[in-house]
Length: 295
Figure (cartoon, rainbow, N blue to C red):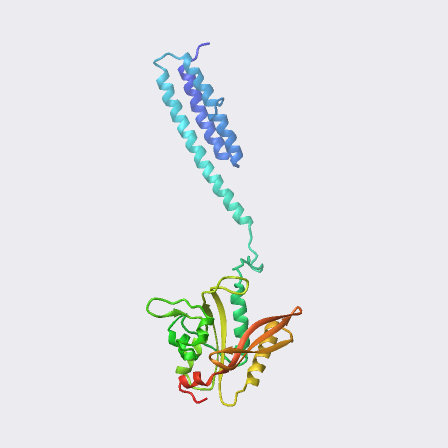
């Protein structure tokens, strides 16, 4: 069978015109893909036309190849333009079909929870503030004076053996008790005083179920005329009642602290067992004299 150059040129021209029209009328990406395979696939129309080049004379083949490349490039450009247009239309249609109900609640993203230690401290502070106390804070790195001497614990006092201390270069230390805050506060404020001071304290204790090298204390101080140990007991009982939400059995045991006299330990009965919860006492006269107050 003889193939004429003009026949192939006509077929290529027809392919270019028909493909442009068909691509322009494609409505979906699926239809467009079917057209691409039909025109440019291995068994597509362009491949079939180029398959006839072998029947042309060698001098005619370059001309057909050039025409075929022109048709192929135009076809690929039309396909790409149409694909972009269909994708844009698809996105626009999806956006148009979506609605936002502004009356619906937003998506809640949990921000985490308060650490148990902070939760207990915050609750205790809320109770004491409700009882008329003001929150006061002090440094965790202290001098020996505020941590010991001003609290009626001179260098040779045997009570220092009760607390194994972290000493720092230069003579300072990490406070072993929040009681140091009361000295600093009384130096700057005159009675009546009612403060509560929370914070970390440090001791060189062996870690076990009831001891840690770093733990938290909450210091309470009330200085005013006419206050007695009975007022202290009433404050502690009310705090424990609010803290634990019920009236639990409480007992006061005689104890010793260098900076209070008299001193006591307070136990709370929980599930039939006594649990030590705090220490207390009235401020020792020597401590008051040290900050210029008349006991």
